[in-house]
Length: 158
Ligand code: IDP
Ligand code: MG
Image (cartoon, rainbow, N blue to C red):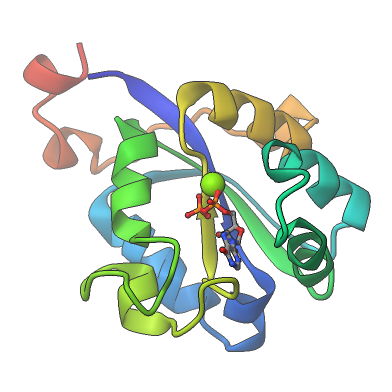
């Protein structure tokens, strides 16, 4: 158990379909803490760097084009085991196969246009947060009043 920060992207299809509020509400309702948020149309180069581990795969050029084609919302979320928790809420990459109850499973029909990105490891989270929130002043330290109700502080936060 560790408090982690993770990068989440609400992809162009989420923004175009008016699902930003719906998806953000799921993360908030789960108890994840919002520590950074921005809406921006990022340059292709940003996604070339972000998706560098996928470079050379057949879907890579289309992925970079899709991600830079329209605005994206970038979030940093914090919580105990936040990386795994977010990945679970997102569901499987192919939205048609993602389990009902997950974001992709409930809201999507596509393998590529699958609404949401979440970092897959602590190393990825650190690398990706530095891309989208290079200015560390954009990531806030703050204490939600609900924290001692979301967690058992003695068991999970000390
Ligand atoms: P993830 O987003 O669930 O972590 P990754 O394997 O890291 O999935 O792939 C990154 C993104 O590339 C996916 O979210 C999806 O948009 C796209 N993608 C991955 N594999 C495929 C594929 O086989 N066909 C089409 N798009 C894909
Ligand atoms: Mg991935």
